[in-house]
Image (cartoon, rainbow, N blue to C red; front, side, top):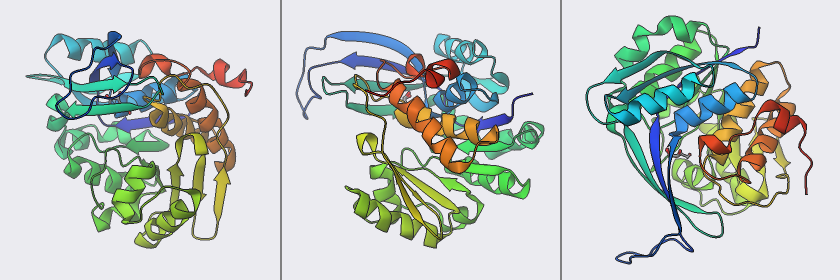
Length: 305
Ligand code: RIB
């Protein structure tokens, strides 16, 4: 029986346009395409963990609109257990995404039903948390819910991962002691630590601050530059596999879900990091959030450029 990953987080319908470049303030651009794609950082990470070999349960909320039905259906199609994905009155979460010709994106999210995932809902599904080996949270649901889940996960003795995305400032100090793996990107590591992260050297300084704050281990993802792993005793750099990127949406989510699935399956930390990196590299070669996430066989067959 594959190991169990539980994701507590968001589901969004992504409204994605492509344009030559991202628009400036006040500017109207002519886009080249539009698509409606299942996304949300929580749901993307759940799909990644499921496609990459884990049994997955999701705890989240969708709205009573057509998007809610599609978002839940997309998880069910991946055999993800959705008994704890509640349908609440009102609109589902949405993300407005622009992707440019250099594969970068800009995203605005509106929480909708994700904002109604309260700690009491997570507490109601405690039996789901209890089955987990690894629990993953992000920051697209209320902070009180994230704080509750981290603490409960730690009390249950689970491996707890926080992907602090999106982040606009420091995390509550009391959270750190419950986090086994903190996985920010450059801008999130900057927001959390106050150290401007724009290189591997500055990533080391930021990671040192986050370890000092109490995080067990820190993995700062640096896009095409790879990532930095940090623990109390060491820093280790992992270069990114080389690929031709067309859309970086959900690359971080694919790394987090892949890393969690690999860790839960018994791989070592270093193996799980490399596995997550290959999955993320493959995801940037395809468009969209969930449609871009590779399967286990894709990762096993991967040959770098
Ligand atoms: O990380 C990518 C995700 O961020 C998108 O799917 C979008 O929904 C936003 O949450």
